[in-house]
Image (cartoon, rainbow, N blue to C red):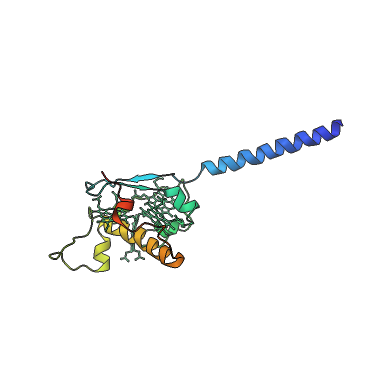
Length: 150
Ligand code: HEC
Ligand code: HEC
Ligand code: HEC
Ligand code: HEC
């Protein structure tokens, strides 16, 4: 009887340790939701609430699908505790690319210099591919689904 309860105790403690280390590990995950309000320009359309953690954990987007280095090479081994540069640090021009009939014709590379154009290219490209592949509309591609009304 005594030995049995000792074994029981040991297994309870063991399980507790397992749970504890699992939750410690879970504590080191990426930020849950990021309100995207890049400094350097005023939002015309309303800030985007970006579900960072959901994208990573539920939608299975890899870090390197969004984060890359100064050469554009995906940062595949990024950790939640790493220092991450904001998109604006490289895609430096404020706001969206020029639009309308008088807008200059830009190359893809020149468009990507505009901060919002880089965001759109990242977010909307994946959403379109995902929707097409899965025959769904779950990933938003219309303005107001991402830009909450002000
Ligand atoms: C998949 C989500 C998504 C969709 C869809 C989307 N945007 Fe954006 N947009 C963003 C993000 C993210 C930013 C960067 C916001 C920031 O960091 O401040 C942005 C920035 C902008 C900006 C510059 C900042 C501002 O708020 O004025 C403009 C203008 C803009 N988007 C217009 C549009 C228009 C017009 C559409 C529809 C044709 C659209 N966006 C669709 C995600 C989206
Ligand atoms: C679907 C796109 C996407 C994915 C996937 C993604 N991130 Fe991010 N992450 C972003 C965006 C956008 C920002 C905000 C950048 C900005 O403000 O200019 C950001 C910001 C960050 C930041 C700094 C800001 C903060 O609040 O923590 C860290 C650290 C980070 N990401 C780590 C990661 C790691 C690690 C992974 C993979 C486990 C990952 N991200 C996956 C898009 C993504
Ligand atoms: C350290 C600098 C740096 C940072 C930070 C950075 N980028 Fe980039 N990005 C680049 C470079 C360099 C390229 C390659 C451009 C080219 O092909 O001319 C690139 C390319 C891209 C492309 C085009 C990818 C393709 O396959 O065509 C998108 C979209 C993009 N970045 C979005 C983002 C977003 C969103 C963020 C923030 C989460 C971000 N970038 C952060 C430097 C950066
Ligand atoms: C690598 C692919 C990928 C990238 C990059 C990506 N998304 Fe998504 N996103 C998804 C998928 C997949 C869904 C829908 C999943 C579902 O509902 O089944 C989604 C859903 C969303 C939704 C609606 C559900 C929610 O969680 O709020 C928003 C808003 C959104 N994304 C914003 C963004 C923004 C803003 C960016 C760029 C900073 C971005 N996404 C980049 C794959 C991506």
